Length: 513
Image 1 (spheres, rainbow, N blue to C red):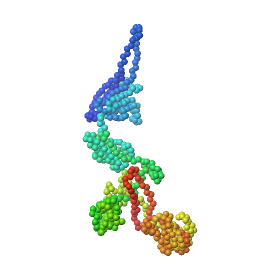
Image 2: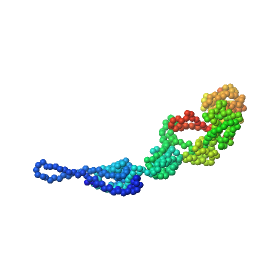
Image 3: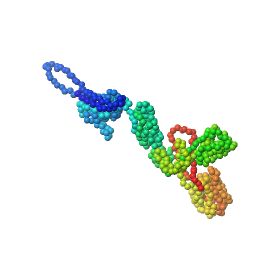
Image 4: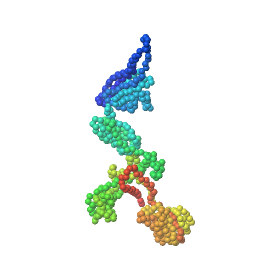
């Protein structure tokens, strides 16, 4: 006979919310075997046979009132501790360091039946003492939770959590800010954006089955250098490049649109703020009003409609619908700290008041001091054909000391130029990127026009030309513009197209003298 004696300690049941203690003894006996037989003939004879019974499984129940919470059971069987792995297995010789053991038993969480299988060295009887067990259908009630999200890192402002009150069923909702701090409906806590570890406290007990979270995470996907246009090996591991850094010059901008209820002649429209960076009037379709129909005062922040006034664009086409005064303010400031959560600290206070929910921040590319200039002037007896060649220098020359080539920031461009004489006084101007640009003569000042600005690329004074120029003589020189080269890389997030057209505006700003 194999006997299992079970002594049940106290534990908390969900249904009564009180402590109960029961003691149960269950005996598991081997089957009795009765054998009857008769000898063939002769006298009676005494005989003895030994029968070895097969070891039976030990079976017992931990509770008769409610199911068991998976992973909550610890049993002491004899001198050993057996652990419930949460998946219906009981582990013998459990190692708390490695989390491993030998599965020699099972537990049915619904029926609470425990089965200990036969194994080598199992005693014929043992006392089973539950050290830990959670009993109850809805025992998963909590005041707080600590867990890690399925994916990380998380996008700032992309984590939300909700749960229902255990007693009233009311729903609690919480949301994390861009620093990972969780607030809302009495919920407090924090989520680490880098690894997705969340710690949450609720204002009242909630059920675990009602606890849900939503999070947006980043995933890095290797890109083909041919498609990207640069070698991603040079990028950070996650592919993200910071656009705002400490000591950057930042531009804060806000654009506001105000309805002009009754646009009539002599009406003065006030933006409600001064020192506007840009402003205009447009209709419902975004077509701009003819600038001749109003006088804009950016310093005062007003636009005065002309008299007479007609709502039309520059081509005299009537505008559609209502008119709107669109105005933009900009402030520039030095960034003293750019935090990883997106918070920016500025070195000085801002002049304008910027709405927090509709203000954009851009980083300004600092180009330093820029100026147009003429350099590398040289003259050759024969055209070297390209813009890198050299040759025999001419005896005649241009007097750069007394009559330097005039150039300004507005009309200058980065270009390599060549003046080739077609007679003793007439010449042609070629640009490496622009080809034949203009013709001129040493008898008059030469000012070829930049068609983009309507101002000269440069001006060569007629008095600077010396005598003795011949057909084929060539003058070579370079010009630099008051600008700097920029690399523009556009990033388009994956997804369906949401607009039919898009545009990009690059603005050059700065101080000049």
